[in-house]
Length: 135
Image 1 (spheres, rainbow, N blue to C red):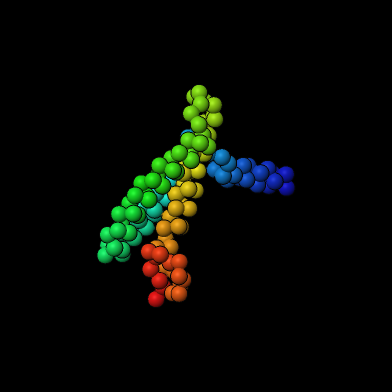
Image 2: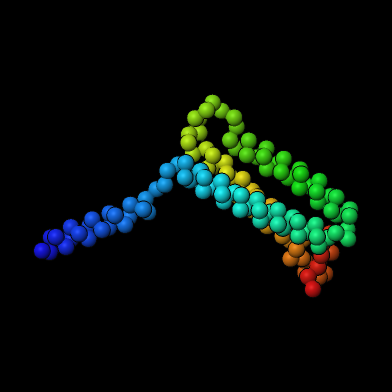
């Protein structure tokens, strides 16, 4: 009877843990792509909020748009630098996930940087430039 109980616990453990073991590479690629989409949305939300809050400063808005366009080019170039075009299969089936992960990381860094224009800089910072000061 005791052996049967251990056997049932073991089978139950296997059944429960089967769901926690790895996903397919395709599923992981898809999940990372969705994470990238969320990061892109967060960046776009911050960007649009900055444009709204700084709309009274057209020179800043113009420069922000130029900077953002150049940043997208830089991000894409950084991804190509890390994952240069190679023959198909060179990096394996994990490549889409890795590239999306790297884009996500760069996008989150940019979001954090731009967020400074929303959160502001402590009053008295003589190098605040176009960043509004905190109230």
